[in-house]
Image (cartoon, rainbow, N blue to C red; front, side, top):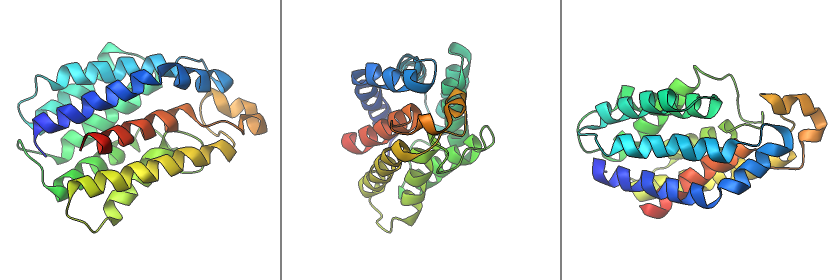
Length: 201
């Protein structure tokens, strides 16, 4: 995977998430502020803009993470920024093989875990992200496309599973049992991001 191709994946993710911006905000409005769609689009837009200037993976991800955190506020930008910074910790050079791609996403998750205690079952974005990274780690194919497809499938299933969960983090946790019956907005948007990555590849 080259830097240019990763940029194209990121642009595709922004395109797909923009298409569903209102949907994500409506999901958020059920138990939160109702601004997740706007927040994830703003954060990803900052990431895409910064990625265009990158000359190597490590510097690019570091700059993306910092820019996302500085340009936007709130948990969405903090978590997405931490994800990119974690990627920066484990990559180098201008091209990644399948092992490098696995390590990149695993590094993103590892750093994100320093920002949130949420796990699978807590009705957060981690319900999509953790299964996606685990699916990559378990994938035996040496094709990057297969890695991304496995991640997208796992993220989708994880997001769908949040419909029957009780929220344990953020404002949504105050709703208790009433938070059941709708998909978590963060899990939905991160699932859409992984789907876009697989689609582009």
